[in-house]
Length: 286
Image 1 (cartoon, rainbow, N blue to C red):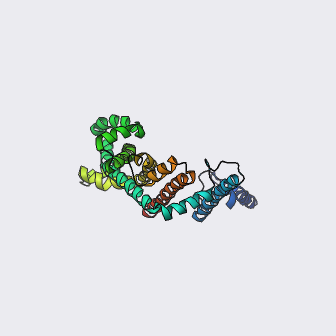
Image 2: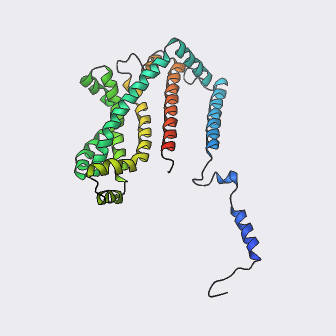
Image 3: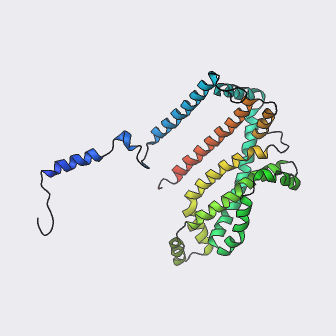
């Protein structure tokens, strides 16, 4: 002991080192620790393997006759029905029409929700004026508003876009307001110190600071927009995946119904993965 410090015995050092090695988790067990990192290739392998396992189990159960094909067809029957629909029912064109409708309504909702949400969070009087009405409307069920939308807009394309917008805008505007609320006040104070105006603080400071979480929220609400597609496309529609699904349901063609549903899921999954890849590339510092 020198001046209050204890110098460990050299003999104890190997034991300490060995104990640390014993406490270190293995590569396999470490992946199951709370919030442990998972190598990206392993994540893709696990995702593909689990999806194949689910489909194989589904096919096996259907082939054993444990389900009724009319209500729960096998994945192979759904895939065959999808192939027939692509070749004889112009399924690719219907998917394109639905994609345009969803993206049109979603972009309209985003263009409106981003400035309104930022204003609600940045200026307290705006938030106090708008938040009660937005909270009220976002709890209204969209299917219940279908008759009103027909009265207001008729049975044309405007009604479909309105219903998709309605299911997206009021959720998104509150998420944008929350993103704006999380921007630290120190950012604004620093901007004002160097002579920035309010408009510059909003555009160059707040918007850039909230951009990573904003893109994540846009990705989530795009998925919500797709969930309202069937509701929007049963309103006097003659095109779109919702129309295809609804027409097949009328004749109890369950494989075709599920083929349309699966195609919506595939388009949504592909879009989501693309947006996630863009997010990772754009914000590598996170």
